[in-house]
Amino acid sequence: MYDKSVCIQHIEQQSDGKQEESGGEVCYYKVYFTRGAGPLENKQMISRDASLLENRVLALLCDQKQAVPPTLTSKLLSERSRYYQQYTDSEIKGQGPFDPVTKAYAHALARIHYMNLGQHPEWLRSATENFEDRLWLRAWRKEWHLNLTIPKFALEYGCYTDRLDDSLSRLVAFLRERTMEGTSLTLIHTDLNPDRTRSMNGSPVFIYWEQAAYGCFYLDLPNYFSVETALCYRDALAELGLDILPALFMERFHEVGRYMGLRYLEVGLQAWRRHYNQTMEQNNSALQQENKSTNDDEWNKQYWFLHYCLELALNGI
Image (cartoon, rainbow, N blue to C red):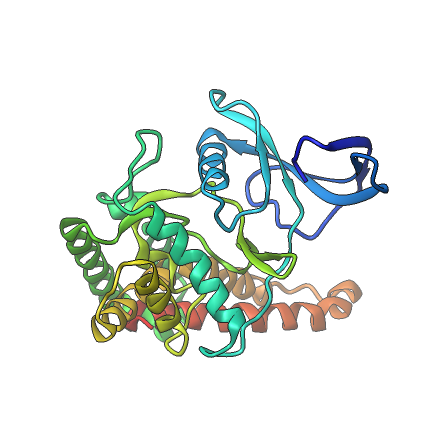
């Protein structure tokens, strides 16, 4: 909507929206505008308080016409400033490797990675060394050892402690090899969970780049792609000009699955401890009884997520 013929008529602030805030306040608007002598139109917009890094990444990706929403960034010098962006809809789910939707998301992500291969602007933080700090791979260990002080957890899960440490060492070795090799280093998102994988006018877009870095593109894959769909990304990358042998690509995809498990295991561990403490409380209030079903449903999701992350952390995808 940002062409010269657009004339904004008025703006209404909305009460809320469905985009996760993720570390920065998000405000919602409905913008009414005309194009030349055309009829009155409207679009939903957001503004978000964001870091200088995220503003710079979005400015770069918009200049490259990548799969991000149209965004107006203002001050690319201030440590924090607001950007204005077209509102996005929920992700359109692809149904397997042959679905055009799956291929569209694969191509959109591959294009971002390919067009920025080997390009490391001085302002873009690096994730090519000190992996445990720069990729948030220490938090799980703190939560794990805190949970080990609870006998019930130690009895059921303590046997996995050494294996998790070995798995982290294996992931770090894998990433160190990719840094030395250099062929997969590019602009990466590092946190492409479902809240950040969206759609706009039926096309894929990726939002919230506050944790972007220069690093190995394999790190962006496990959140969205499965064993069944990962080759869609490889094929898209090959079409753009980087052709990786399929078997080698899948071997690396399998290894990097540990990243998703180790990074998000912290959340599942916190949920386990919270649920344990709640069940230990001797409070039989009526309110607690009324909330029990809701709490159980939420715990079932968290319990699943804990074991999903544990499996990925131990074994990869």
